[in-house]
Length: 465
Image (cartoon, rainbow, N blue to C red; front, side, top):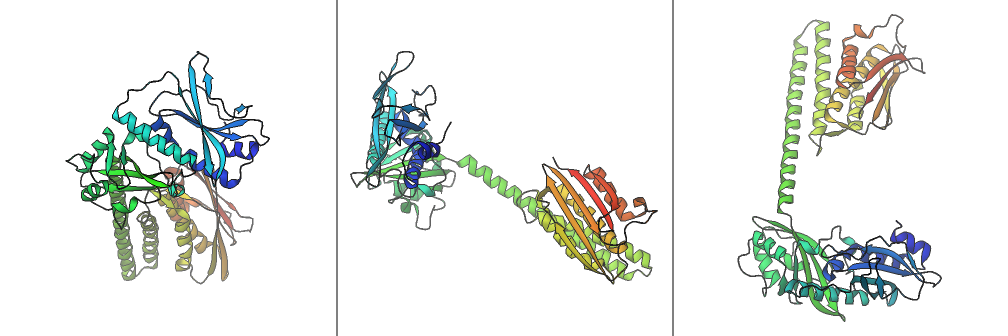
């Protein structure tokens, strides 16, 4: 199905601003369809003046539809869209067209479609809906709907969620049953009809929606805000209604979002708890690393001192991941930051060698459990390269990563002397740890080979899907 923009660009002479105005109307016209109990079709004139194109349509959520099939993209070759239509089953559909005005010019027609035989019981709700829809359609005729400020709104509430109609002074004339139930949950004990909506709502609020209070929402622009009482939360959309340039009143759509806000608070609390856990784990690991460092200073044997240093470094790699997790809002780790931090620690264990380290490519976001194992693996490979690869005063280590469709390939290479002919990865504790983590924890593969630069290269493949 073509979009409104497609039809406007290819079949009409509408400007970009006029097309944008129609898109704003379509983004807000569900309320008109629901209030008028009818289908709406937006017609734009053919660029050659030979007829009209159906550019958009909407069905009501409050009544039956006459649009049994989508008609967007269809063409009517006549001076104006038909005023009546007969469906295949013989039922007659009444169609009324309304000019859509923008900056003093008619840029489209809005077709209202309803069954000719349709009769609704004229109760208070239907009467209030019909009166409000008449005002909104008149605003369309006058080029005043959508109301200024609409482009800043990201949400549109439904008429069926809850509706309040207030006059220009803010006094309530009609409240739908759903809206009344929402205000009861907000704490209202009296009747809302005839009351000052701003005064009543302000008394019930636990947190004001703006610094200036609830009254600031009733102005010349459409606005949306959350209002919170002690036991309930409401999402409210205030639409100013005008007729002939004069303020007619306000249409207030609202939805009870109490349960949604409770779930959001629970999630925030859970996320804060998880981040605090990671923070404490990081602190405990750093304490362990500090104890290992103190112990290494008291050990005389060089071999024992080096073993304690390696244990301290491994604990520090795990702590680094938990520190990253403690600063995020989920269990995903931006691993580029972890890898870059590990590369910056190379001088700590590069004795008498100046090592240049670089990362090529991006790891992206990794799950916490994957990041922990991969950080350990990368730390072991970097230390092995620095300690065994270089015989001169300078060297270079490159971490190259490629991630495509859930598969991660990592290469750690150097420009050193390469692997010995009798190289055995199992003879090195660090490489044994790296191999075990890759194959057992990550479910990947690891290979050792000579790099194009003549040094050593370790390649890791991990399936993240």
